[in-house]
Structure formats: structure tokens, C-alpha cells
Length: 547
Ligand code: SF4
Ligand code: SF3
Figure 1 (cartoon, rainbow, N blue to C red):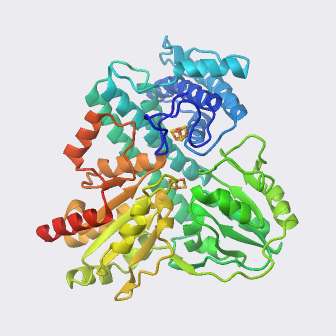
Figure 2: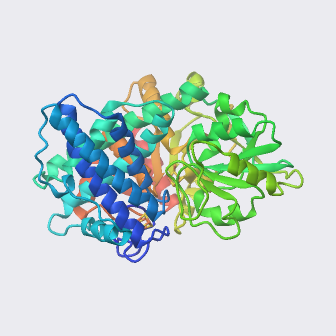
Figure 3: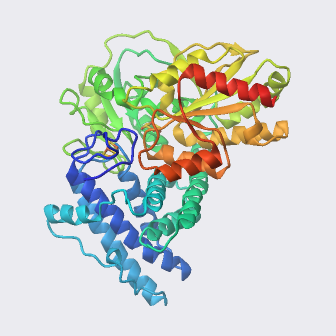
């Protein structure tokens, strides 16, 4: 196997024996075969669109399949065997349709023709033959191709949640198919790939926009909400991941059953949505970021539902309490079918629950674009009056590797006349700190999940309009942490928008070749994080000079 798609990659720039995430070679190679089959399928999806044919099942399948290969989503070999088979079935069906409508289906590319082997062992071998390792001859093209593939996985994650809520957008599907099929074209140049990668950022903005429309359209705009970190006596279900629709189903299906529903990880911001917070048994938040789940899930006295990433190998102590749904999976772990959460609910009722109320701190969430723009005048006055000196967007993924303490320290050291905006699971490094407020504006504002980077972008655009300057001239700096491929797609979106001077850590992606990195540094002034003191001093000095 060879996999280098996340920040937890093994030393040497690739996981080659087993994934640090727990991904086994068999799964890695079946995932590679699935991606390869999607490239073949995409050839006909592109040709179909040219001839006025699009197939909603192919679109949805492509998104689901890509998302299932994202880090910490699905570890079940059988799941990927089925997806490869389905992918080839859809390819043949689409090929026939496109041909009937006068499209050219003459591609002799192997990905357009291959037939999956009958046994899992043979299929794994087929997958191994398609594994992409960094190409030393054409390192830069291969680096941009990988960057694009990982960005596509991020887009797929967001498009998946949006399509679950009935929001789709053909430009998103069309780009995914174009980019995947481009990976079969060995004539593309470095310039072509720069364009494709930046387009990935543009399309990811679209995917996040439709997801924002889906979430706010169905559940209302988030409002500032205080969330308890303690627990309430009684049975309990813990919901992790990012999918609001699954959470709503769980809230509906547990109503009147004496079960309190808790969020975990990236579900924290869902407490701010009016149509979710209205459920009286939607109690609070339990635990922190995904990499602490072994400890936190083992201690949780109820059942646990993983709606999306990030899943780690379930320990024996709680493997009968944990349930996966959607594209998430682990061999031998109960999987929820057709949104019927009865198995997880029954398990929650069998388990003891919390024997008494557990007191705890509270945290605030729900500062998405609507809430922040609602007080825009106050914010603008505070900046103009000198009460707010600078904004820091300290955002992105959390992870297990050492070095992430940087983000805790950074936030602790941010001067008192500055505001910290945050989103995604990296916030768990500092989410329960009381940073006080500036003239009634909280100094720590949780915008939401990683996909709410859309909201953060809208806030930045609104501020730049109000101040009559470009986003890069705002007193706003981005200090980002990455782990998986959604962060790659968001980074590409920021580059597409021309955002400069991003500080990125805890380490830089291993799939960036030296020349690609050099390009990013020269054109976008991307910087690796150093120390909180050094970075803060540099940012505030630069800003003071500009002001
Ligand atoms: Fe390694 Fe990350 Fe790939 Fe898992 S997803 S195999 S940890 S690079
Ligand atoms: Fe986190 Fe997995 Fe990236 Fe949604 S939950 S941000 S790591």
C-alpha cells in the first residue's frame, strides 16, 4: 500500500505497511481500485454531459464513493468490493446510454474497460497495480494531481451532506468528473494542473455554499447558544461526525424515550440551529476532538453514533455500543440501515446512562455568518475606535500528533484587544477557555464545523466590503491546522480566493513537492507555523506597519 493523504502519514512521506489511522493494505488497495474505477466512470460522465446526458445515480455514487475513501471514514474491505463492482456496472450502463445518444465511447483507456476480479484477493491485486506513488520523473505534476484528488475527497464530503438534504448542484458533479477523468490524461502540463487544482478550490466553495444553504434552509441560521459540557441523569446517545440530517433523525426517534442526546466532536455547533435546539432532550456536548475517542467513548455510558469521519478502531470496551451510518464503516461494527436508529436507541436504553447529573462548564457556539453580521455595526465601530486591533481565524482539524499544542498556546497568547474566530475540530484545543469579551463581543467566536469555512469567508467578505479594502488588507490573519482532505479542499478555496499569508501546521502536507511548495510560498506567502510567540509578533508587527 501507499497512502499519503493525511497529516498523520508515516515517516518517510507515506503509509506503506499499515496506515497510522488503522487502514490495512487490503483496504488501501481496494480504495485505490475504487478511485481508478471512478476515473473510468468519469470519462463517460464527461462525454455524457457533452451530449446532454447526466445520470443522477452516477453523480451521487461518485460523491459517496469518494467520501468513503477520506481518512477515518470506512475501513471495511467488503464495502469497497461492492463499490468497485457497482462503479463498473454504472460505467457500463452510462457508456451504453452515451453511445445511444451519439457520444464517443471509444476510449481504450484501461480504466474505461477493466472488469473487477471475482475474489477479494485478486481485486486487491488489481488495486495494488493502480496505487499512485509520488512520481520522481514528474514530481510536480504528480504532486498537483494528488492535491486535486484529496481536494476532490473534501468536496465530496460536503456535497454528500448537501445531497442528503436534497441540495445538489451540477457544476460540482461536473467538475468532479472532469478532474477525475483528467487524471487519466498523461499529456496535461504543470500549468494545466495548477488550473485544475485552483478550480478545485472554486468548486469546493460552491459545495460548501450549497451545504450552508441546505443546513440553514432546513434548520435555520445558527444563533449564539450556551452548551453544557456536563451531563444529565438518564440514558444517553452520543452523536459524532458532521451530518445534521442524521442528528435530526436521532432527535426525532428518541423523543419521549427518556434518552438525552449529546454531541461529540464536530457536532458541537449543531446546538446553535433553531430547528435542532428546539428538542428538549438535545442536552449538551460530551468530550473533545476525534483523536480522544478511545478514552471518551469507553467512558460514555450510552450508545454512540458515528455519522461521518473521524472513526478510529473501536475498542472492545465499547464496540457493542458504537454504530456507524451512511458511508462510515468498520468490519463487524453495527451499521444503521435506512436511517432507522432503533438499534442504537435500544442499546442506549440497555446501557446504564448517567446515574446522576454531572456538573460541568458551558461553552458558546452558533456564531455563524448571520449571527456575526447581525452585530457587524458594533464590530466595525469597535475596530474603527481601536477597541479591536486584530482578528485571528484559528481553525482547522485536530489530530493526535505532537505539536498541536501550538494552537492552544497561540490562543492563550493572543492579546486582549484581539478576537479569535474558530471553526472545525481544531477548536477543542481551546474551546472551553473563557477569553472574556470586548464591549460585549465575545473574544472567542465559534463559527461552526469545517464546512462553515463558507460562513467565515462570508464574514471576511462582508468586513472587507464595510472597510472598503481587500480581504488581504483586513486586520485578519489565518492560522490553520490540517489533518484530513476536507482541510485540503478548504485551503484550495482560500487560495482560489487569493487569500495570502496563511500560517499552516502542524506540519506541511507530504504530497507537496518542493517546487509546488515554492510556488505556494511565492504566490500566496503560505508559511509553516513556527512558535506562537514568533508568529504572533510577526503578524501584529506586519499589521502595525500596514495600519
Ligand atoms: Fe496513512 Fe493518513 Fe493514509 Fe491513513 S489516511 S493510511 S494515516 S496517510
Ligand atoms: Fe475534524 Fe475529522 Fe478535520 Fe471537520 S472531524 S475537521 S479532522
